Length: 75
Image 1 (spheres, rainbow, N blue to C red):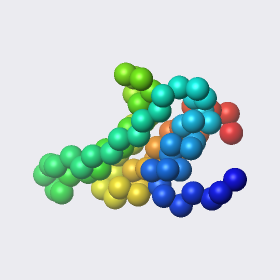
Image 2: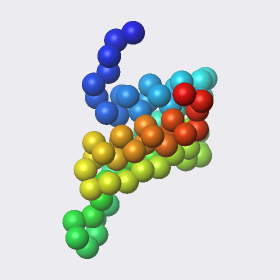
Image 3: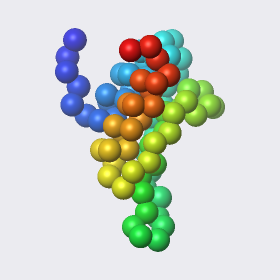
Image 4: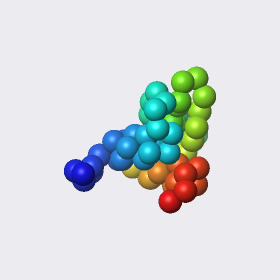
């Protein structure tokens, strides 16, 4: 297996292990607000949100998503 270094691709790979056979989509967006706002990252399966994480840094938001997905699966 090839090592994935892209944070979003790591989340997609982990989500596919947690929910095999489902249509997985990972979305991230910058939310403006007082104090600079934050980056919101979500994992969708169909129309449901499986996991959500937010942080000021987009890389940390995706890392938080990895942690939330790990809580859903047995690892």
